[in-house]
Amino acid sequence: MNAKVVAAVDLGATSGRVMLGHVGHNELTVRPVARFPNGPVRRVDGLHWDIDALYSSVLAGLAAAVRDEPQLSSIGVDSWAVDYALMAGGQMVAPPFHYRDDRTAAGVERVHAIADHAELYASNGLQFLPFNTLYQFAAEQNLADADGFLLVPDLINYWLTGRQVAEQTNASTTGLLNIATGEWDDALIEKLGYSRSLFPELVTPGTTLGPVRDELGIRADVVAVGSHDTASAVVAVPATNDDFAYISCGTWGLVGVEVNSPVLTEASRAANFTNEGGVDGRVRYLHNVMGLWLLSECVREWQQDDASVDLLELLAAASALTTAVPIFDANDPRFLAPDGMPERIAAWCTEHDVAAPQSRVEFVRSIIESLSVAFVDAVRTASDLSGKSVSVIHIVGGGSQNELLCQLVADRSGMPVLAGPVEATAIGNVLVQARAQGFVEGSLEALRSLVTTAFSPKRYLPRSR
Image 1 (cartoon, rainbow, N blue to C red):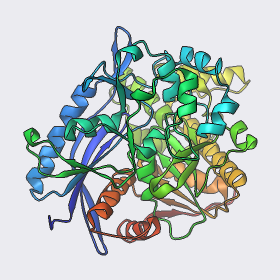
Image 2: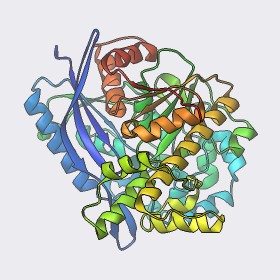
Image 3: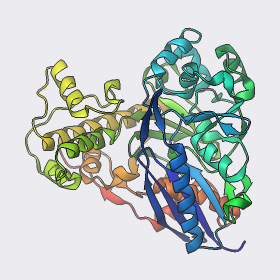
């Protein structure tokens, strides 16, 4: 095809979107053609994703994309990490569990009885998170009934093309990929008692998986992108030099630096930093911070009691607040589960002899202040542990629109913060497809130069404190 148009399917933990990207020499634009909600559903056996509804929304979004651009060249899918569907005979055994389901605690105990975190870290380089796929497998009741598994973006790709593969950047979050070789870790898989036959063929970003199945009526190829949404977001960081840190900020805050090889020191493990696969063999050396989930959960609960609660109004009032608010540990695992977020923040404050926020505005300001502390601490630690110099922080994703957060990160770090683009994940998705199709060429740095030209970030300079 001669068209320079691709579609990015970008699935987040609270919403999804289909974006059209136009790409060429010195040309890069994206625009949404569909947005749809996403969230957990509670079934008898626990918290799941409504994957059938999500796929229906994807297909409707792609149909809208084709109506707008009949000469659509390709489609790429990205999503959150770690969650999967078990497969048997080409069919899904059960809908994917949600990573916030509490079943994973038992899986952690079972895995660590066989291999402790120090041994795991030497192999997979991952920070300890109780929902990583290897722990979910250990808690899985249906593993014996399966002949394979697919992570969420790989599942959507399979339903689009009929091809079962695992894209490498997302596979790197399972805990079952060897971070040094980039291949499934056969020794660890065997030690943990998982069948090697479950593990699909690995592919790298930029691999063409094949055309969309004829019966779906969409004439386009499907290209594997950096299917972990953070991998795609980091592609679209509008960096002009190598000395940058990134904060991909949405439901989670993924805070770190890009390096060429993993950091597997004991100091890195103790700091709970992770090494995840990036596009073009880069390593995303980062720490997961709870992110704007803290804020969105509070607002969701307040709106259940008072429909007039408005996030933008709360943020404006929080920015104008002059009284001191508590700083709490945004990384405390108590904040992982849904429901009761304001009460859990207040309980943390009480337990640490800190006066809890007294109003909704104070809660909002306390959350943003606490996130800024956690983000800046993670940037400094990433730089120290990796040896990579950092002189500027890029905030991409939805959090780049939060002016108070961006300014506080600049103030606390003493470094300029460049905010945007908001749709970094979709842009990175589009760029990897475009390069695979030959619409653009070059390294990640060349792709980022396109982003810098097309999406000028907003600059926040540190204020004296």
